[in-house]
Length: 165
Image (cartoon, rainbow, N blue to C red; front, side, top):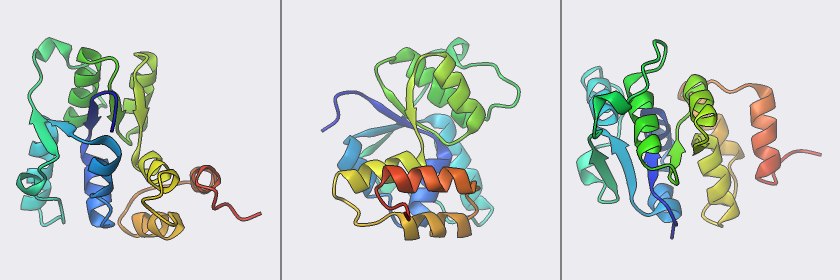
């Protein structure tokens, strides 16, 4: 079981749902917390016909409001979900953030917050024995619209022990 709080943004929830890997989150992290903005973003996605997870059915996911709007980083190019995940991280500095957005990750790093992304979750699941392989899952993520460079894919496969020699 995890030793700290875990906060998740929209894209990891969306992508893990779309590749049928959402159940690995509670196995790896126990209870996962999403800010209210993430629930709102997923709701908007559902209204637009996007295949998004039904949050009410996820007993391991808690939706949490931000304590103060002042805690939310005011960065123009940062989405509301990313900003609120970072705010939760700033309020709970020992926590882990799960977010994919490059700018969000940069801000998390500058704030000295721990973070990972969708691919990091898959690597951890492989290392923990919950997945036998992640190569096909990565390919499926790409078909779902996740933008991944060949270098990112290669590094991820190396971390998972699946890189071709």
